[in-house]
Each structure stands twice: as structure tokens, then as C-alpha cells.
Image (cartoon, rainbow, N blue to C red; front, side):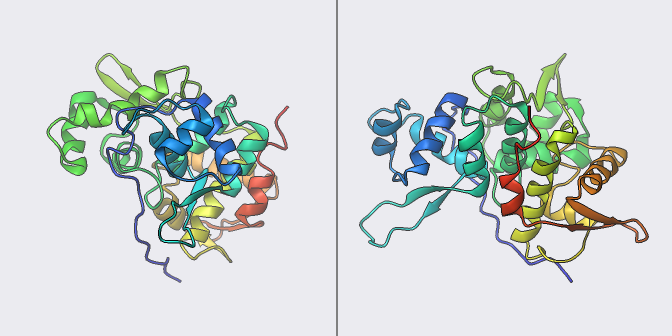
Length: 285
């Protein structure tokens, strides 16, 4: 069965207003969303302490980062005169209850993977971490990457547009413990996502949810569908061997079944993503 056609709902290239996501503020935003706070610049700032001026600042970019990371969603108001409210997603609720300040590197990794998604992430992250992979692999000259990405994101200064996308992974207040990309000797170097036993439920939840959004949440899906709908190997930076290692881990943990008699392999997730998000931290010490 072909995957359902989706309309991308990625955040635009300038949603961040050049700010990087700060873990402290992400945590405050999750608490605000847990209380059903409104998606309005001043109300977010007043309730969370996230700094914001009269017409700009970090409050809306922080909320939008949380949206792009799949941590919160917008709820339409009943009245046309009211602002939308924020609500936690199953992933967001798990993080809010267990690691709301993103101290675990894997929390950062999952938020990163979702930010890079084609359908619900953010434009610049999608192009830099997903679409660029077949072109550049995990290492390439920074100026070549900027030349390639410039027409995709528009504008005459791709360095400015891409700067927060790179800076956040080097800043201790942000996602340095994930470190998905670094600058090294004029190159941009991607770090493949780590594979560890305690990360299995999180990876299964991420992949299962992507397939649910594509209308393929029931039954078997091929590895090619995982690549197309979730960016399975492109976003993670995994080789074929690493991708197989992850699927074998999910099988050992009884999170998925893998049919190796077909080519490409077929995968069936044994639990819906909502149940898997509830198990996100169950194997963490």
C-alpha cells in the first residue's frame, strides 16, 4: 500500500529569529504548555520568564522550537478572537515528567531527529540534516554545503540563516551533549545518532509515529518507507550496517518484528507510538 500523501508543515527558515533553543527555556515552555498556556508572545514571557521585548524576543521562537521538535502542538481556540493554546504531545509529556531541562543526551537527540523531519520539523534542519545526506554524507566542506543549501532556503546569506542550526550543537546551554554537527578544519562534520539498549523505546516511538502520520501505522512497512517517511538513515547518519543494528535491537527488545525474507526488510512495530513514548525513560538509570 502506498504511503499517504502529506503536506509538509515545517517551520519556516526564520522562525528562530537567530536564537538557538536553550534547555532552560524549553523546560519552562513545557510547563507552560502543560497548563494549557496561550500561544502569545507576552503571555508566554510573563508566565515563563523567557526574555521578550515589546515585539520580539525568545518566547515565540522557544515555543516554535518546541513545536518543531514535536514536544507541543497548537490547539485552535473556540472563539475567533482568542489565541491558540499549547498542549503537550505524548513525547512532550514524557520529557516534561522525566527530563524537562533536556539533561539526557538522548532527549536532545530525539528532539533533534524530530526537528529534522520532512513533514513536521523545520526547513533549515530538514535540508541540512536530511536532504544533504545523499549529497555530502557525514562530512563536507562548509562552503560547499552553504553553496548547496542557499537556493533551497532562499536569501543571499545562507551562513546567517543556517547559523542557529549549527551553533545550537556547540552550546552547553543548548544541545551540545547531542552534538549532531560540528565545525572542524573548515568542514561540517555530522555525528551519527548513538545506538544503545536504553534508547530502543525512543527510536521505536519516533519511527512508529512517523509511520502513523503517513497513514501506515498498522501492519508491516518496508525499510524504504522508513527512509522516505522518517528519514531513517539520512537524518541519523547511519550506515546500512548501523540501520540493521538498530532494527535488530528493536526486535530483541520486542518493540518490533523484522521480516528478513523480503528485500528490503519489512518491519512491524508491536506498539503504538503513544504507548512507546510512555516507556521512553524506563531503562534509564
